[in-house]
Length: 348
Image 1 (cartoon, helix red, strand yellow):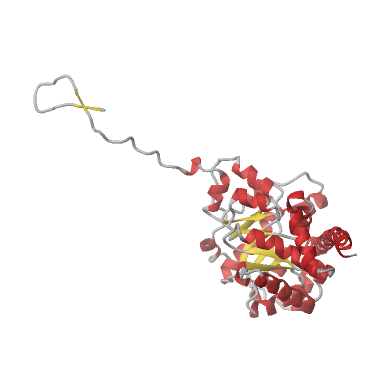
Image 2 (cartoon, rainbow, N blue to C red):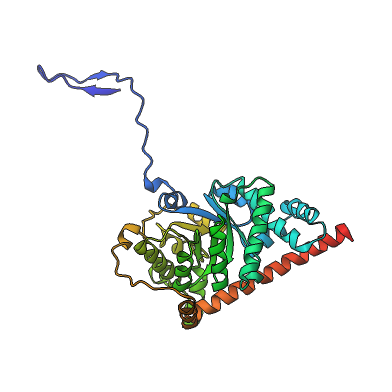
């Protein structure tokens, strides 16, 4: 009901007139959205987990896995059948069983996310170009056997020089790659120049190194060395028109994530996705491709010798790359121990 005044004659008592109109629907504003939903308006959000149920909860575009995440998922009771099926498929062959296990988790994840699923090559092949290429082909063949197209899969490879050369060949074959353990602009440039589909520059691990080196408890988000590294890589790519996707990874807190809003992709753990879901403060775009084009950034002509020298001069990148490879290899061995026991129980 609303009131109107007839101004054509003497002032009279307002007459109540029915409008018979439904109340206006309140428009949803940015402040009504949680930070995950706001972030999705600026960046493609990716789930960094092998836990299928966690992925269902947050509805990401893509999902990434690695040996550490697969190990965590494989020891969860709800995924025991996936492990058992992989053991049966492998028929006693440990290598085949391990590959099938990675593909089995990836297949389940591909049923949930509409975009890419990343599956990692054995970290122990990080310095073996041909070995990496052959392993990637094997994984793609296994995906094809269960009807998952290779254009849904990103083969994850550590960004050593050898790994980058493997990715160069795989991309020529139409096998898309995610180059991981990126800690240096040298790695990022080398990946872009061979046409890698996507790179995963790490944020939190860079911050960890600098915290220890400088004896501090942490950094303000704008001064976080990991955030600054990914920002520099993103701006370099956009300045020079590289098509390789930049996907920030390895976050320690949600402030690092928010400081990279606008990045092509961000892969986020379920814990931090929940933190962002529980918060509703405004999320502002921090990275902008249009602005990067006009930045004064010198071009680096990347060669193997330049790559190796730049890595040599960057203690953090050298140490964290080696540490990351060792860590993934360690978790592969732990997973192998579980699988070996199951193989023995079934086939011995």
